[in-house]
Length: 458
Image 1 (tube, rainbow, N blue to C red):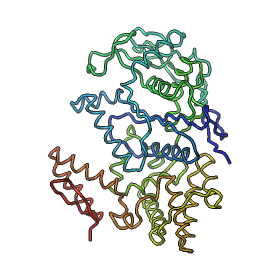
Image 2: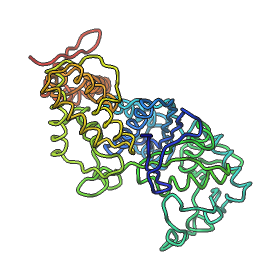
Image 3: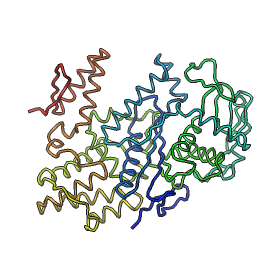
Image 4: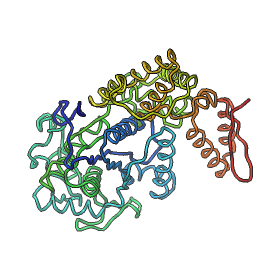
């Protein structure tokens, strides 16, 4: 069976193919780095981490790009509130993002472009859109995209222009020709800091959010690439606008397949910073080990909504412990993957059907049952190997089950680094809290001149 993917653009599951045989080019919209990542961000990062792992396991060369939005209204506002530079804030938040993603076992993409490094490419694309009659200069200095001049606007979201226009009103100060038009280049405001202003043929200013991804994706992957991904909330307007910009400038389809992961909900509402109902990855990792959090996300299908609660995470923790208990009882042998094996074949069939991780995880539990009944080191080896394709079961079982109630090495080191950062900032109360939290989870820290090490409490 070949890989099939649900394509948001066609609204159907269809057989996957690539423009270049054997090579997948994938772009996923990343974070706007004005604050720490929350669990909704983790859901997207883990979903596409699993996608790229399975693509590589299927024999593809994968070029994976996940951008960083490091210029945005929220970033400017937060930096001004904090009294720090834009670069200082974004560098700090990118480092925090990496620490959180590393803790969750998320492999870093081959390219992680920062928007501020691609302003020349954005300006060239805006210039092309103006030449093509799709962009216009507004009276307030902005450059806007003329939505009604792009044939096919709404094809990704399935919304008609009349539906989109319902209830809209033109704000006089925006100088838009139509309320649906969106900004490509924002004219500089006197109140904005100088490090968010670029000279351009359109006047001093900065790029709009949507043009950033269009320029970065096309520069790194070409005018048409294989997979464009992101959260379901980006389908409209962000991805719809990306299509309008990129196809309006290049005359080529932007992506062959569009993939969107579902939300994490809290009390049946999407987890988001705007609603104030979010939990940062770091907050969650204070209560649950990183692999439990990853397992909680992986065992649900990437397109489904996922309800967050301590009850669900505790259930995930108990389920993951059952898998590790099987591997602790029967040390896994090194095995060569045999896709003709019935359970391996079922795992593959599940993953080949739109990355069906719930069915794939079910196979892991069937294998664990076989390991417990037979004591076969080969079956234990297959369990570990298949788990690895989901980013699971790679920690030493005894370490996982005994040390820190499942805290893995990466998560522990992240906490050690956070403690070191707190001490450097002379926030000794926070440093003590981290030490005490780790001690409560069975981790004893040992400070020395050469650094901090840890060991499991006796």
